[in-house]
Image 1 (cartoon, rainbow, N blue to C red):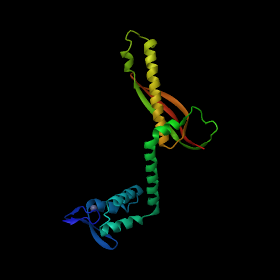
Image 2 (cartoon, protein in one colour):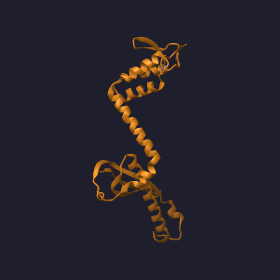
Image 3 (cartoon, rainbow, N blue to C red):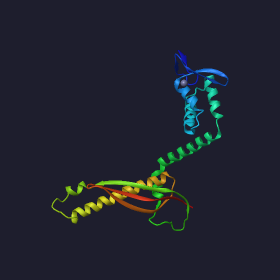
Image 4 (cartoon, rainbow, N blue to C red):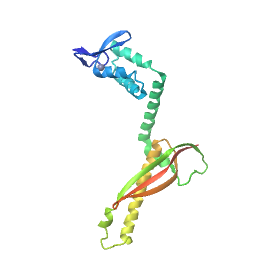
Length: 209
Ligand SMILES: [Zn+2]
């Protein structure tokens, strides 16, 4: 049974064949599909194929080495895109490792400016959400029928913790996007049903000068 010239996997009884660097090689179905995708007009498909060969092409086989050379020659825009993706990956890894410190350093304000600093870049409008059930209201103080006393304080406690949860989510989203401040922070409350309330914290993520 023929072996795939690129990835060394079994290529089946009737392998596909491609000419690489002037020589014909048997390829497995997956390598063949990716080989054809290298010619795709869709950049994303092309990039997936490039990544596939970067990972799968055997460095020891003649065809594998020829493939690595071939994809290295592919247009510069793919290389740039891959470098951008790599930088973004590194940024996200840094974010995962340091997000809590970054969230602590983040400036939040309901205003549209930060004292002594100007906005260098507006990143995007972001939000954080939390949902609270109101079922707990019927569980406490069955004897109290209006929203006063025990019930209202339990309710405002719940609301406060929901607002905090929404803010935490907003902060996480902000630092993930590389912001160092969120301006114009406001809250919205949405009643989903008689026993669900949504709290949404919104703001504009910015980079300060
Ligand atoms: Zn293969």
